[in-house]
Length: 96
Image 1 (cartoon, rainbow, N blue to C red):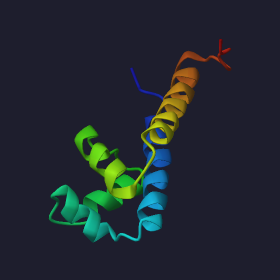
Image 2 (image 1 turned 180 degrees about the vertical axis):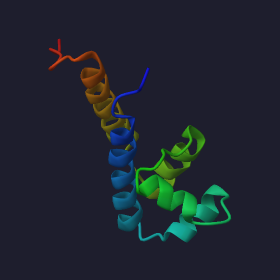
Image 3 (image 1 turned 90 degrees about the vertical axis):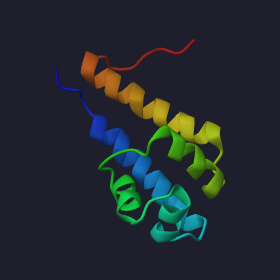
C-alpha cells in the first residue's frame, strides 16, 4: 500500500524550518554542527523536503530557532490530516 502525500509533509515542514532558520540568522552549517552532523547536507535535505528531521533533532530545532512548539505541532498535524483525507478519500472533517 502506497502512503499518499507523505512528501507534502516533508515539503511543508522543510519550508517552515528553512524560514525559521533564516529568521534565526543561522547557516545550514551552524545548524548541522549543533545537531552533531559533519556536513550541512542533512539540513539541506530537511529544508528541501526530502525527509523530516528525527524527533530528537526536531526538539533541538525548536529550541535553536525559538519556535513555538504548538505552532510546529499545528503545522504537522494539519499536514497529516490532509494526507489522511487524501488517502481515505474524505473531503473535510467536521470539528466539534
